[in-house]
Length: 443
Image (cartoon, rainbow, N blue to C red; front, side):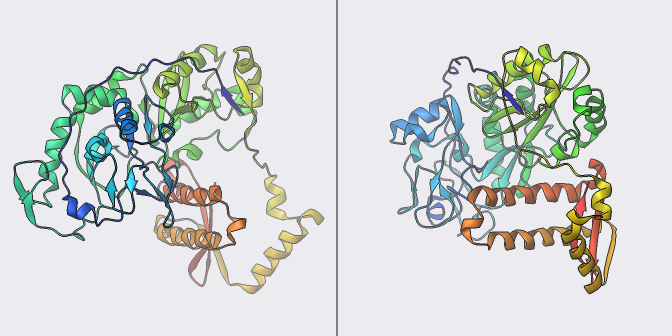
């Protein structure tokens, strides 16, 4: 189940002046690029973030207010690409490749091809360059010319010099205040962003601005999470997959996970572009009312009125405690529970069809079933990509947009599980036919 509470009115943050930053990539290169301002998914975390002031400037320049779900600060809503697949920023004119709000474009766009992101362990903020940029990959025209908007001439590929200038601006007092007020501007870790340097002052500012001591979730926290789960009587009675460490940790490339000790309970938060929510109810023995109230207060402040504030995966046994505090609850998706012995033995008429399939497989193939090894990672990932391609090739009516997004998201989770299996406490098995991995599973 999920729990939610009524959102009180939120006051808009005080306006903060944004210092314009010079563009690094020459305009003549940008106008021939087919990467920027385009997004593969409607909810892509790469969508630019706008502060309240930037939203006001964008609307004054003609953007529809409905493109901004939260006028106090949010990522822009993208629009379908009229000329092909994917989505476009609503400020992008595909006919001319120009930005309709270029003079008032947000900071997120100003610093590109640089990107701000959390480190993979969520302990510090990093500044890096996006390797998807054709100009930085050397695919665009490279020449010695003035930096657009600035007096100095330098090699256009000297991204490190530019990064130092941007880092100096970002860690100024004014910009620190801005970024602390809009922490969702900091994106999740991206493997294809080349790290240039850490931003220690910004990291410290973000840590200090948090009303509760949120700590990034790492693999070293696994024993802590497992002890907290074991001490929560209501969770132990309901053997659902989410009441474990690995089912959350494998999604860390899509969500930023945080933990916090609140009123003697361990709270596990998940954050994405739309805001922060509790991935599990407060964990630990005893009543949860105090921890729940403080956690919800944190989410309301962090989310600035967004409807994303919620608690997920509430067991049936905790329903009375939530209802007593005035929370509304709604059913979540069902989860299948199986008798392991029945599946292993496939005895009886109800298992006649899968038993026949297993017997046919054993008869027709020379196979080996054995433990997963780290050296199997690439073969397993290749197998997943093949399977996903087969799913996407099915009739469009049978594979809706949500299912396609789930295929892409699941690829990230599979990669994390295959890479971090031992640290996550996962046991893997693979099936080989003629020496090639043809199936794998984890639990």
